[in-house]
Image 1 (spheres, one colour):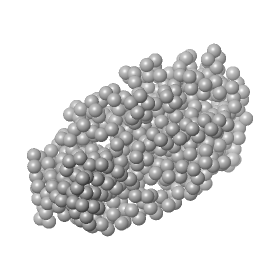
Image 2 (tube, helix red, strand yellow):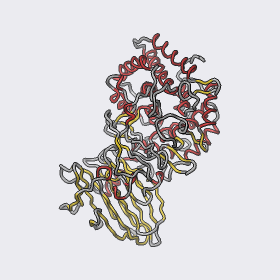
Image 3 (cartoon, helix red, strand yellow):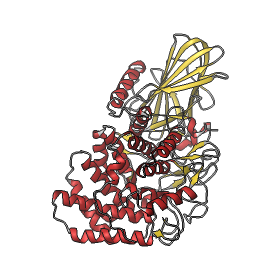
Image 4 (cartoon, one colour):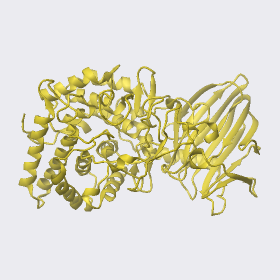
Length: 604
């Protein structure tokens, strides 16, 4: 059985990622890209679906950490006979991607065992394994090849590769696994010790660029490193998570593939990167965004592949039993074909905030944003699937309309600032019309709160974004009432659920954890309302949910006291970054995004 979600650590080379448990087992790895088929898929099945474990024989006490400022993981195993340190890392991508594991003796003598089970195609395909001329163990199936080299003796045993060896104080044993296309020559070995030095140096140079030195700075740096690890270096796209199908409720069916880039993450991600001093990454993410959505405005999707791919076929993997029995396991994401009007607002806001933050202008963005605004003028009044990607019927979601307002508001502001030729009077009229409609149809006077969709009585955590995007000030009684309604109906032991899945017609069985990003949004609302002590207390609770190496999943189960959903989740870490910066800086991302310097009509 795989470990608890929060018991995993992340390894990565900014093109793919692996998850390693506290017992030294790499249970998830896709090569050569984040969204490639996994060659280790024990995370979603069992050991026979592929894994790579290195650990002492028998029982041990485990302590682990990342080397400061890096994604180099050290796991210390203490046994009665001695202590060893397992060092795991993925070097920055050269000709071939690789994963290096070093076992170093610290005290006494420890018997160690290594078990490598290579399975391509999400744990289904058993490769043909041979021995190369230099002693490498070579595994081939179809287009894929893996080459394992080690200073320890290797042997085949029951369709797996194993090794047993003793490590004394001062000893060092290395393992390196390298991926390559099977039609090419066997990948050359790497110098394990030199790769360690170079990898550590690369990450430390990158993380040293962080300009934040306020409260919770360690959490900020770890979240930034995690965000960088989830960035596809060749294009600048930021993936939502490194995994697919980790459940939102253990045993449930809300299991989705998150190894793609969501547009709605764009503005939050840009803020986090810019505010921490990472303008190059912010620029790359902005450029990825513009290139990816370029084309016909009516074909804009909510999510794309790491390089901007648009075609996704969602299919189920029948040979994987799911994480702790949570089926189905899904590859691809059918939500790419949904209509979600809020993404137009996210694109406009991201481009606006990038300019305001000092990211150099990108000419193609101007005409693209105008074309998107023209299209939205014809479609904003239609129903959609909403931010939470309901698989039920389309409806008029309040958050979607708010973000349509954002799209016009930011475009109008841009044209006014740069005196661009545009139908400003017409767009201002549409902006005001959307605002009036939301305040009339999206607000329930009886409840004193905005609601999930027009005519609904349901609370929805996405409504916490109303003051954050500047639609209404946090002091507005309607915003105060909405926060109160969310506190009364969506809090679960102090953490925020997206909505009540037992009451919502979302096309899925009920049941999921509290959504961590939404809980950070509640803290942001407290800041805007001047409830700083409550915001600080909530942030502290959220930070305490991170695992022993500082990582967060998508959701949290307060009853089971465990993390849920895909892991690590970029949106959770981006929300963490922004909330910390909102509390730690006077000129915060929250102030910049919520203050659009507009006089909002007090309609309704």
